[in-house]
View (cartoon, rainbow, N blue to C red):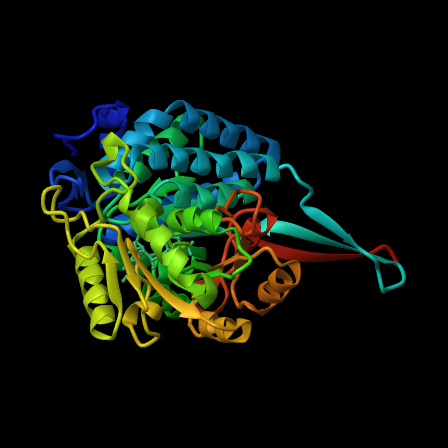
Length: 485
Ligand code: NAD
C-alpha cells in the first residue's frame, strides 16, 4: 500500500506502517513529497467517509473498556509509548525532515518535545481524579468525579507533525478517552509512525487510530457523529471557525489552537544584542512556519536604527538549505506558502516599506526556498501587519510611546503570544497586564513545554493544551451527592 523512494529508509518502511495506512477502507493514494527536492517520499493509502466512520466505530467500542482501565495501566502504556518514541528519535526526526523539510536539529528537538507530553500525561494519569466538596446540605456528602468524555477527534497541522499529535493524544488517552487522529496531508508519515509505536506500546485495538484522506470528508464525518464527544484542532483560524460551527449540532467539547500574529516589542532599556538574537529565533525557527512566530516587530524609535542594522546582519548570516544538512532555515511547505511571502513583501513595499535583505526565492536551492527577509518602516496598512505571515519575512516598524505600542499590538483578531524586551520591571508589569494574549514572553522566546497551559485568547482559539488544564476538554465532571439520611 505504500512505497518509498528518495527518502529515509529507517523502520518506517516496514510492513507495520504499510498495514497501518490501509487500516480503514478507502481508495486512492496520497503522494507525500519532500518540500526541499520535490521528490516523492511515499504514497499512502487514503481512507474515505466509510473509513472515517469505521474508525469512530472502533474507537467507540474500545472506549467501553479503555475508559474503565486503572489509571496505572494507562500510565504504564503511555510510559512505554514514550520510551519507544525516545528510542526511535533519529528515525522519527528523519521522517519529519523528509516530509516537512525542517532542519534536522529542529526535528530532533520536536521529537523530544513530542515525547515530553507523553511522559507528562503518563504521570498526570495518576493524579487524583476525585475532588471533595464542603457540603452545604445536612446529611449529604459530595464529590466531583472527573470522567473521560468518550471518543475524541484530533486534527493536526504539518508544521509540528509529531508534537501536535502527542500534545493532544497523550492527554486524551491518559484521561481514558479513545482517539481518532487526522493529520495534515503534507505530513501523514510522522503520524503513522507515532501510531505504529503506540500499537507496539500496547494500546488496545481501536483506542488510537490514524485516518489519512481528504480532510473535509474525514473530519466532516467526525464532526457530524454524536459519538465523537470532543474535538481538538490545531490549525488555521479559518478552518477552526468551520469546525466550531460543524461541532455545534452535537455540542462537542472543543479545543481550538488556531493562528497567531505575535508582536515582538523592544524598549530602549532592553539588552539589544539579546533582543536581536531572540528576535531571530522568534521569527525564523521552522522557517517562520510557527503559530508562535513573531509576525511584526515594534522597535522603540531610540533604538530602531541600531536594531534594524544588527538584526539585518544577523539575518544575513543565517544559512538556508535542505534539512539533512542542518541549516538555520529549510524550505517552505508548498507553493502557496511561497506565493504568500511574495505577495506580502510586494504589498508592504508598495505601501512604503524598505527591503533590507531577502525578498526573493533562492532558485539555486529550489522553488520553495524563500530567503530570510527583513522589511523596515512597514506601515500598519501593510497586509503583513494584520495577516499571519507564516514564513521568513520580518516586518520592522518604529514606535514612540508605551500606550501607542500596546494599542497597535492589541489591534488584531489574534491573541496567542506576545514578546516583550525591556529591563524596566514596572514597564514589564504594565505591558504584561495590557497585552491581550494567552501567553506573554519577557526577554525570551521559548515559552512552550509540557507543564504549561498553551493557548490563545480572542480568535487564536479556545481551551488550553499541556499541563493539568490539557485534560479538561477530555473529561466531564460528574457531581455525586450521597445522602445517608
Ligand atoms: P489548516 O487549518 O489548513 O489545516 C490544519 C488541519 O486541518 C489539517 O489536518 C488539515 O487536513 C485539516 N483541514 C483542512 N481543511 C479542513 C476542512 N475543510 N475540514 C476539516 N479539516 C480540515 O492549517 P495548516 O496550514 O496545516 O497549519 C497552519 C496553521 O496552523 C496556521 O494558521 C498556524 O498558526 C496554525 N497553528 C496553530 C498552532 C497553535 O497551537 N495555536 C500550532 C501550530 C499551527
